[in-house]
Structure formats: C-alpha cells, structure tokens
Amino acid sequence: DLPHIVRLDAEAFPADPYPFFVLRQLQTAFPDFLLLVEDGLDLRGYVLATPPHDAQSWVRILGIAPHLRGQGLGRQLMTKMLSHLRAQGTHSVWLSVDPGNDTAVALYRSLGFVAEPDGPRKDYFGPGEHRLLMSLTL
Image (cartoon, rainbow, N blue to C red; front, top):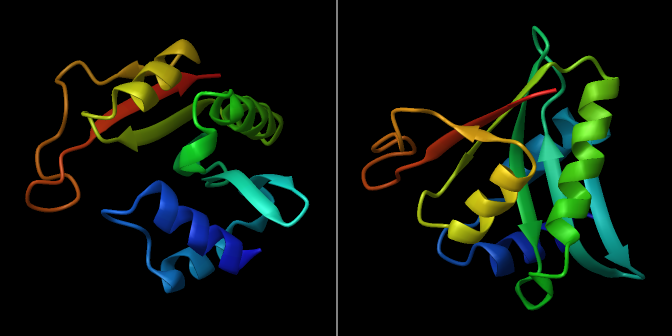
C-alpha cells in the first residue's frame, strides 16, 4: 500500500507532499490507525491518525484523489476514523489544516470540529506555513 499512498499524497498535496520516509514511519508507527478507500488496486483516499495518548489523538493526514473530491470520501473516512478513535479511548481529536483550504475546513466543521479561538497559528510548520488548529470532543 505504501507506494500507492505516496503517489496519492503527491497528487493530493502537489505543493508539499510528505516525503516517502515520513509516510513509511507513520504507516509503521500507527498501522491500526490508517484507513484506506480502495477500488481494486486504485487508492481513492486515506486517513491516518495517532493512537490516543492521555485520551487525545491527532488526525495527521486526510488525502483524497483530486478527481474524486466532493463525493463524500473524506467524510466517510473521517467518520470511520472518529468511530475507531472513540472505540480506542480517545476523548479529544485534534488536527491542523491550511486556513485557506475552505473545503477541508468546512468538512471538519460539519463533523463538529471547532477552530481555536485565536485563529490560524502563524508559521506553525515554518515560515509562511500557517495552520488552523481544530479540535473535536468525542
């Protein structure tokens, strides 16, 4: 699955895909917290989260094939992951999102995520890499 995840990540995030080694480490570290939507050998989307630590988890990546966006795959993956996290003892889920990604922000809000009241954190991932932190209480 890893080569397919790497390919999809590059398609979903062409300006800043995760390096192969990062995806390898995440897949190895959290194999029970990686969910895929596949059609045969065609990877359509994936979500990766962290296991709960002090009842808190992070959604690290949600990637959907660009030509399949808007069809509910992101919602399907997030709903399944949130159920899985709840069953594993997670009480709060966090994620970060590009504040300019209105579609993703709207999806997360529709699932009950709330943005930090102070707004986006400047340079969260480095210079010019602002992120909006959002959380959900399960």
